[in-house]
Length: 167
Image 1 (cartoon, rainbow, N blue to C red):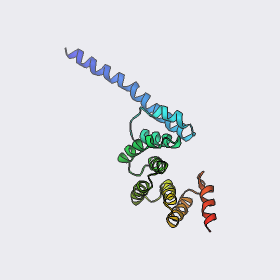
Image 2: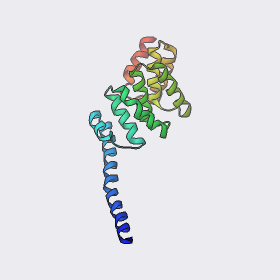
Image 3: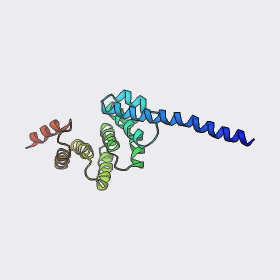
Image 4: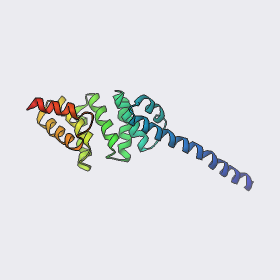
């Protein structure tokens, strides 16, 4: 009987290794696809994965595809584990603004920024929410910080154009 138990434990350990390795490959592949802008492919790789990184990048992939309602839950899950995760913060901001939940976006992004004040996309998405609420002074302040933190971001030229139009 003892040999059967030991064999079972060893066999279970051997079976767990490939599953774990496959999961890690899916997460790494999903993150790489996200960074390449292949959001639908990243979503497919990350949708069954677990963990903070998987949730954050899944949320980012969903948000980039304008699946805002779907993006909110994995973003919040990632932020529960890592309250200032840069990708999760950006995904949550984009998801909330995309759903026109401007007050929620402002509240949640402000809370994140009290913990870590150098998250460029927290300022960007909070600025977007302020813009939609016609709070120009706050929008301008957030956009200026965004540009200071991420001057080469893809959104920087459009943010600069908005600020220039207000002068």
